Image (tube, rainbow, N blue to C red):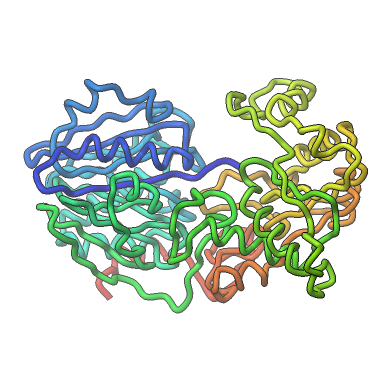
Length: 490
């Protein structure tokens, strides 16, 4: 799997927005490494710098110096819809009769093609194949006829899918979260203004204070002088569809999403993993860095009870937590290697076992997910080659059986090992002594949400949006684009 996007927007009291946006994007770099960009407005005109690459590669001192203005938005991208080139890099900018727009988008629309065709037939010219430009053009058209709040509401009534948006309309900064709250977005208070960001870690980087999450279906408008924000609840849905994988994998552990500290959620998922499928081994170790918090919680729970749930004797310390796999942080993604042999060699370059921790011992290794199974197979083999007597694999999430359409670049069904194999078959395929996943009910329990308030499409094959050829887990129908245009004020 690859990361989703990160968005940010700030409104400050007279201070330049460029550097705070730059630092915030650094804090969100884990959400996308393909491109980065900033758009600011100085009260008279819009300024933009967007390019391919990491934040530190895209921006130099001179680039920030010309991004004038105390309001602006930023974006880091990993492409899940649209081309992998600069035409889809964000923020996306457009100028029209009513001013200028900049738009940063985290998520994925289901009906972007339908709206694009309608807009193109009406004379709109598109420069990219991404869904962000579709939102920008639709909003620009609505701003010609409506005030800001009604224009946003009209666009929200037409687009269907997941989105967390930061938008600049001239020097006004907006934040919008889709009616089911699939993608995260939060509000923070700074010493001299306010910030909107995908994760609270960006707020912390600027020495700010997390105020709260943007509510599903809410529009937040930051005041131009940085003194506050206005809230408009534009759409209310009975249920949400929060992406549970934010807590499992994507978000930074130090972020708070929907009132839950991600690190604690992962530790508690690890505790649940022990309760559901704990196995008495000499050592439990994480796959760095994704399995670390899970393994910590798993080991803590193992120190309290036996695998069968009975209290552990005082003299019995349980399963030892150990860092048995060391990660080389200077090796790129394994999938860029041109041959399978090179990809397998790259795993050894990235992860190396500590022999003294593994040799002659029974080992439980914990990760957040198994996608294709290739890496898990190689990890098990590495540990056995290093002398492990047994290797048991535990996963801090349910089996991934279906693709994600909501903004995670995940494998197809044909590539997902769990889509057509049982847990026992996967265990045999990766050559583990045992394999267990966390249950979906355990995830909902840890996150303190009903299952129907989570997006579980990738682990159930049933989605909270109306997607062609897929089942839904609720009563939902995508908007009829033509009718939403005619009846947007209803």
